[in-house]
Amino acid sequence: MLGEECAKVNELPSNSNQKVLDQLAPRTVRSTLIQVACAEDLGDGCDVTSEASVPPKQRVKIQIRARVPGVICGLSLLEEILEGFGMNAEVDLAAVDGDKIHANAVVATLEGRHAELLTVERTMLNLLGHLSGIATATRRLVDLVAGTKAAICETRKTLPGLRGLQKYAVHCGGGLLHRFGLFDAALFKDNHLATMRSLGTDLEAACRAARRKGQIRFVEVEVDTLDQLDTVLAFEPGVVDIILLDNMPPEIMAEAVRRRDDRRPGVELEASGGISEATIEAVAQSGVDRISVGALTHSVQNLDLGFDL
Image (cartoon, rainbow, N blue to C red; front, side, top):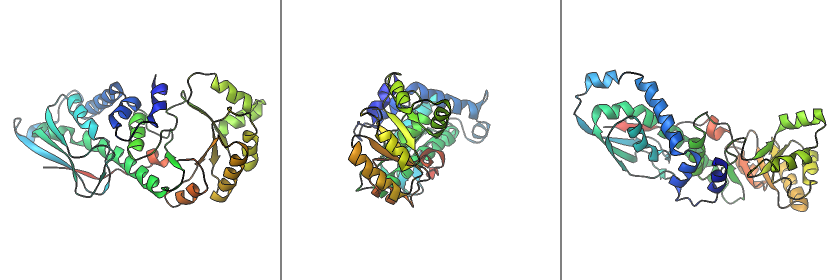
């Protein structure tokens, strides 16, 4: 089950990228994505421009080169893209996913039929650029909070069909996996809590009920105020694993940490809401255990890569 596999990802060493990729985005998922990309580009026809302009048997070497520094991610997909498009080419990787690269660095060399490589160029650069952009943004945040206890996490603010790959890119940038979907963890957020208040539903009882729903990784509750935090900290031990501090300023988070340490030291505190490179150091210095950043997947800038003869 995907939930059981995802639970193991944060414990895997940094050199087990292929295992993480296979857990978060299984080969069948990756193949389907590549088939969709192929259908979008070729439809029921062919690459008419390349076939009209390039001799069919002409072979070339192509270098995929970084135009700016960053963290590379997605190189392990290159051979799968070629296979999905029904093409043959030699792939020589000069880096591995998660490597820091400098501007002008060659990350891969492809050798094959010129027309075929032109056909897969955009699919390769789209995936490489997007995933590398996520990994690069994650590494920047990880570096900014170095020396604190805070881990950087992603969220469910992902694109349909790309979630596993986007989460894999966060892993390659040094971040941690949050919940994968709605099935592997319980997170009671503001809309759930408002509905429960209107219905008179007991929150602690709901947390207990969530634990009985299967192999979930954790139960988490969002709070907006210190009073709400006090309420959740008063739950019996083992009912809640994580408390999400939503849109709190760092000084209030620091007080939340003091109260947690005094009353429920086994509960983790997660900061979320409007966190950026400009604010994340102060948030981490408050003493929270985790910082979740939706922008890592929903607002990231592609890493600029070239496809050069």
